Amino acid sequence: MKNKVVTKKEENDSLKKIKKFLNKFWFIVWKDDSFKGWIISLIFLFIVIKGIFFPLMSLATGTDLPLVIVESCSMYHEGNIFSNFDNWWERHDMKYFEYKLTKQDWEDFPFHKGFNKGDILFIVGAKPEKLKVGDIIIFEANYRNPVIHRIINITKEGDEYIFSTLGDNNNGQIQFEKRITEDQLVGKAQINLAPFVGWGKLIFFEKFRNPAERGFCNEN
Image (cartoon, rainbow, N blue to C red):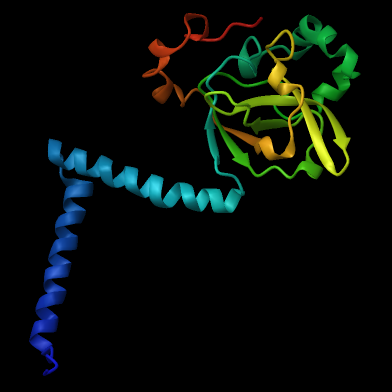
């Protein structure tokens, strides 16, 4: 069997076809204002974000959920970032009495004014031995989505760390958060990256939620 020899002309023709295709693709994705262009652009962006951006972020942050949209009001403080911390503490201090957490402790905690439903948080991997009381962790709880609450107690069973959490806006602990093992950890909240922006997604699912969980937050 003879090997086919690719001539210089055929090589140039192939390169021209590739260049023509790329130019056409670039036009459709970024410059075509038609309905078809918009659809193709959205599909392209979805593939890039889902297939490239998020895997790279997961690799860099050490967690499968580098970005999280807050879906509940369990960490809400009245007034949100403009809340008066002194007033909030007066309303909630008793529920932290048994954990010996003081106002001074709380002022040094990350997110000490909580965060709101619809906020997008930046998450990093959580090393159990590095976590401290007051940190905000994301963990699996056999719930529909991972839970994001504040650590209020840490104990050790043998070589394993056991965590206990409580939502700032909850009046008491939920059973599943009283004993959180290392295997349940998903990550640790680092930055409130985009307050309220997550509502762009949440608004489409609000009608399917429990009526008591719909809409904007109020402090308990």
